[in-house]
Image (cartoon, rainbow, N blue to C red; front, side, top):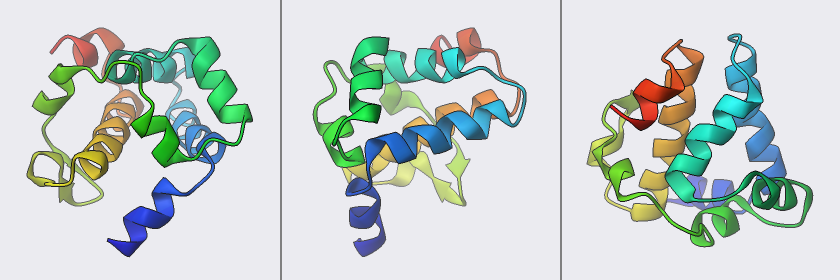
Length: 117
């Protein structure tokens, strides 16, 4: 998937800002984006900030996650017309899962309901 490879090569700080902006535009807080990201990946706030301000790519962010939560594989639904549960490539699925978590935040779902369904 050439388009996906392009996304994985993007600077993580750029992707992170897009995720945060998506939630903030809908009245949510960056802390909430951090909470769902931490739940999924195991990164601390300091680690995320270092990745966002450093040279890391989005692919580096996903590959280097300290602890990918196995519960992320239970995330269902569509994001950008793609059913998350049907994605075969693990890294692409993880990318879409994080986008889905932030999308649920943006649509008003409380963090507690997202990370503890």
